[in-house]
Length: 281
Image (cartoon, rainbow, N blue to C red; front, side):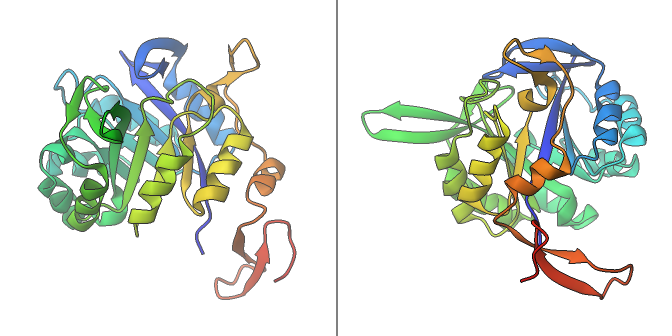
């Protein structure tokens, strides 16, 4: 069966690796290629790289950068930023990227999801939605935004994610604008609401400040992708820049309540059902 995934998310702005707070004030951290090399050594589950300039500037994906990232990356790579057409998506996949993330293009016309999934397979198509909580006399609601949260769209979140799934998305990435970069924990309530509506995988991003935050998210939502930016590029109370990722022992602790299948030999059909603590069940 599937396991939860712990996924670093890297943001690219003006060619450099940055981190934001609530999608604002990008802080330069260094060279994204160097970060990828370090994550290779740490054997991360998956990596998400998002170009936060491309859609805002209405520019093409930077294929030269994507090619460098893909050639260095030794884990599954999801890339997003400026993808508007089937041809662009196909070219990115041909460079060695496993998944493409589309956002604003899917918001404006969900048929692009169908076109790309029919061309590449839905397992390669992630729809990334940036979500902001709003309050009024009618109560609390979640609005879908794009272009680095500068544009809000008059769409009902729960209805729209169903449309996205029906259109052929293989996965949904939910990014909490309100929690971005604050390192105070995920919006678990939002994650649970979205997960309840989906039958495809979900990855949730925004707010993780500790491994305990990741553990809480997984315990509440089950098998999902728990993505984080600040947690894996900063260290300590002064937030020194240091690429990091949990070792296997810490991952076992996070996943302790999740049952998995592990191979007991090199034969693909020789399986033993155990939990991550190594106990047979």
